[in-house]
Structure formats: C-alpha cells, structure tokens
Length: 215
Image (cartoon, rainbow, N blue to C red; front, side, top):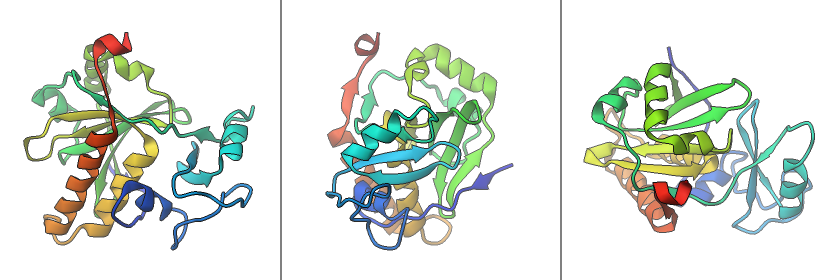
C-alpha cells in the first residue's frame, strides 16, 4: 500500500525548487513574521504535517526552541556517507520500486518513513523493519540522524551507489524536480537531466564523512 503527498516544485536549483512548496511565486518574506528574506534562508518543518516553512534567522532560532515542539529547524549541511554499507540484497529488501529513495525518523509516527520521488509527488512505501534493522546494524550512523529534519538519501540509478545524510528540505526539492520534469512512462531526457544536476550539486556541496569522523 502506497500513498503520496501533494508536493510540487520547479527547477532548477534546490533552493528555488524548495521555495515553490508554499506558493506559486518564490517567497520573499518569512512565513512566521513576514520579514524580508534573502535567497539563502532557514527552513522550519512542522512534523505532524511535514510542511516546510521559510523563516528568517530570528524566527528559526525562536521557534526551534519552543517547548511545544511544533517546529524543528532544518539543518543546512549535507554529508556524503563515503563508506556506507548496503548490498543489492539489502536494497531489494527495502521494497523501493525505483533506484532512489529517502528515509527519515518521524517523531510523530515513532518510525522510519520511506519515501521515493515520482511523477505524482512523494510516494510512501511500506518499510520492512527487519531489513532496516539490518541496515542500521551495518551503519550505526543512522541512529544519529536528527528526527524529522535529516534523511538518508540513496541514489542507485544507472549503477550509482551513493548515500547521503541530507537536510529534509533537499529531499522534497528532489521530489519537486521529479514531479515538474517527468514526462511519459520513463521520465524523459529533461527529468534525467534535472536529477543529474541535483546530484552533481549535492556532490559538490556535501561534506565527506567516514566512520572515523562519526565515531
């Protein structure tokens, strides 16, 4: 059983794509205090709804520390997990129908949520708990991901074997790119180019992390 969220975005860079979640035009103001925002700004997520909000620095700092925990501040740093261990059998056991997905710990549902981008938006897949437990045993770093705001992003398209710890907003930006560019059954050249650009940008900006760095 699968379900999808109603997330849309537009190309090309992930910041521009992300800004399209909330409205038709890229937001220029904080969605909490209405103050003006630069192109590079903070984001908050509302865990119960998984809704992302653009925020100024003051609001991001203020609302991330609220006792009611309504919002969580999304980090900015992405990391390449250089020595992440996953076999083809382990990937197949996760029951993801395409070669790309992201996984995060939902504090609301108290479980790992598995999503993959598709032409209709973010599709949620049933996650085999035993398979995830085996993956976590091989990669203890997964236990250190911040709930709701950090995700394991897996890219196994066209023979790739790439694993990243990324802010959750980048995952939804990727979803937006897929939804915007996908054409026909196979996606088409435009979708492939947009996905390629996304991961090329991620490789350039992500910090390389190894087991020794995370001990």
